[in-house]
Length: 123
Image 1 (cartoon, one colour):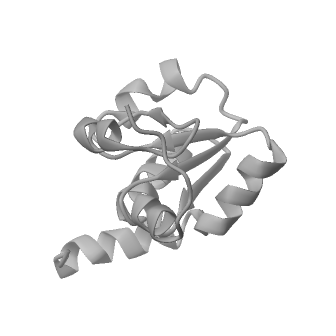
Image 2 (cartoon, rainbow, N blue to C red):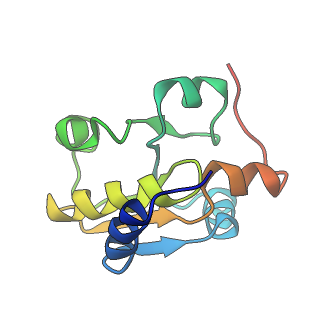
Protein backbone atom coordinates (compact mmCIF):
# COMPACT_ATOMS: atom_id res chain seq x y z
CA UNK A 1 0.00 0.00 0.00
CA UNK A 2 1.27 3.45 -0.90
CA UNK A 3 0.94 5.89 1.98
CA UNK A 4 0.85 9.66 1.73
CA UNK A 5 3.91 11.58 2.85
CA UNK A 6 1.97 13.47 5.53
CA UNK A 7 0.81 10.17 7.03
CA UNK A 8 4.35 8.80 6.96
CA UNK A 9 5.59 11.99 8.62
CA UNK A 10 3.29 11.59 11.62
CA UNK A 11 4.08 7.87 11.84
CA UNK A 12 7.81 8.63 11.87
CA UNK A 13 7.29 11.27 14.58
CA UNK A 14 5.43 8.70 16.68
CA UNK A 15 8.07 6.04 16.03
CA UNK A 16 10.71 8.38 17.41
CA UNK A 17 8.80 8.39 20.73
CA UNK A 18 7.80 4.73 21.11
CA UNK A 19 9.57 1.44 21.63
CA UNK A 20 9.38 -0.96 18.73
CA UNK A 21 10.09 -4.65 18.48
CA UNK A 22 10.23 -7.14 15.66
CA UNK A 23 7.95 -10.05 14.85
CA UNK A 24 10.52 -12.55 16.13
CA UNK A 25 10.71 -10.67 19.45
CA UNK A 26 6.98 -11.13 19.99
CA UNK A 27 7.21 -14.79 19.01
CA UNK A 28 9.96 -15.29 21.61
CA UNK A 29 7.87 -13.49 24.24
CA UNK A 30 4.88 -15.72 23.51
CA UNK A 31 6.99 -18.89 23.50
CA UNK A 32 8.60 -17.90 26.81
CA UNK A 33 5.24 -17.22 28.42
CA UNK A 34 6.18 -13.62 29.19
CA UNK A 35 3.48 -11.55 30.84
CA UNK A 36 2.15 -8.97 28.39
CA UNK A 37 -1.06 -7.90 26.70
CA UNK A 38 -1.07 -8.40 22.94
CA UNK A 39 -3.41 -5.92 21.26
CA UNK A 40 -4.52 -5.95 17.63
CA UNK A 41 -5.38 -2.39 16.63
CA UNK A 42 -6.57 -3.22 13.12
CA UNK A 43 -10.17 -2.85 12.03
CA UNK A 44 -12.66 -5.37 13.42
CA UNK A 45 -13.06 -6.98 9.98
CA UNK A 46 -9.29 -7.50 9.73
CA UNK A 47 -9.18 -9.06 13.19
CA UNK A 48 -12.08 -11.37 12.31
CA UNK A 49 -10.19 -12.75 9.29
CA UNK A 50 -7.27 -13.80 11.47
CA UNK A 51 -5.08 -12.54 14.29
CA UNK A 52 -2.10 -13.46 16.42
CA UNK A 53 -2.75 -16.14 19.05
CA UNK A 54 -3.92 -14.61 22.32
CA UNK A 55 -4.48 -11.14 20.90
CA UNK A 56 -7.32 -8.95 22.07
CA UNK A 57 -8.92 -6.48 19.72
CA UNK A 58 -9.05 -2.76 20.41
CA UNK A 59 -9.23 -0.88 17.12
CA UNK A 60 -7.01 2.14 16.63
CA UNK A 61 -10.08 4.27 16.10
CA UNK A 62 -11.33 3.61 19.64
CA UNK A 63 -8.23 2.71 21.63
CA UNK A 64 -8.01 6.03 23.47
CA UNK A 65 -11.69 5.80 24.39
CA UNK A 66 -11.57 2.15 25.52
CA UNK A 67 -8.04 1.81 26.90
CA UNK A 68 -8.78 2.45 30.57
CA UNK A 69 -11.56 -0.15 30.63
CA UNK A 70 -9.78 -2.80 28.55
CA UNK A 71 -6.21 -2.09 29.69
CA UNK A 72 -6.67 -1.19 33.37
CA UNK A 73 -3.01 -1.58 34.43
CA UNK A 74 -0.90 1.34 33.16
CA UNK A 75 2.24 -0.52 34.26
CA UNK A 76 1.54 -3.68 32.22
CA UNK A 77 3.62 -4.46 29.16
CA UNK A 78 1.41 -3.88 26.12
CA UNK A 79 2.44 -4.96 22.64
CA UNK A 80 0.40 -3.44 19.81
CA UNK A 81 0.29 -4.58 16.22
CA UNK A 82 -1.57 -3.63 13.07
CA UNK A 83 -1.13 -4.58 9.44
CA UNK A 84 2.43 -3.38 9.05
CA UNK A 85 3.46 -1.28 12.04
CA UNK A 86 2.17 2.19 11.27
CA UNK A 87 -1.18 2.30 13.07
CA UNK A 88 0.32 0.49 16.04
CA UNK A 89 3.04 3.14 16.36
CA UNK A 90 0.41 5.89 16.37
CA UNK A 91 -1.69 4.01 18.94
CA UNK A 92 1.37 3.33 21.13
CA UNK A 93 2.25 7.01 21.10
CA UNK A 94 -1.22 7.95 22.31
CA UNK A 95 -1.28 5.28 25.02
CA UNK A 96 2.02 6.66 26.32
CA UNK A 97 0.45 10.12 26.40
CA UNK A 98 -2.35 8.59 28.49
CA UNK A 99 0.15 7.32 31.08
CA UNK A 100 0.84 3.76 29.94
CA UNK A 101 4.48 3.10 30.75
CA UNK A 102 5.51 -0.01 28.83
CA UNK A 103 3.95 0.15 25.38
CA UNK A 104 5.63 -1.48 22.39
CA UNK A 105 4.70 -1.36 18.71
CA UNK A 106 5.46 -4.48 16.67
CA UNK A 107 7.16 -3.40 13.45
CA UNK A 108 6.09 -5.54 10.51
CA UNK A 109 2.66 -6.20 12.02
CA UNK A 110 0.30 -8.95 10.97
CA UNK A 111 1.79 -9.00 7.48
CA UNK A 112 5.28 -9.66 8.85
CA UNK A 113 3.91 -12.33 11.17
CA UNK A 114 2.15 -14.22 8.40
CA UNK A 115 5.05 -13.80 5.96
CA UNK A 116 7.27 -15.46 8.57
CA UNK A 117 4.87 -18.42 8.52
CA UNK A 118 3.91 -17.99 12.17
CA UNK A 119 0.59 -19.29 13.49
CA UNK A 120 -2.58 -17.25 13.44
CA UNK A 121 -5.97 -17.71 15.00
CA UNK A 122 -8.93 -17.80 12.63
CA UNK A 123 -12.60 -17.85 13.60
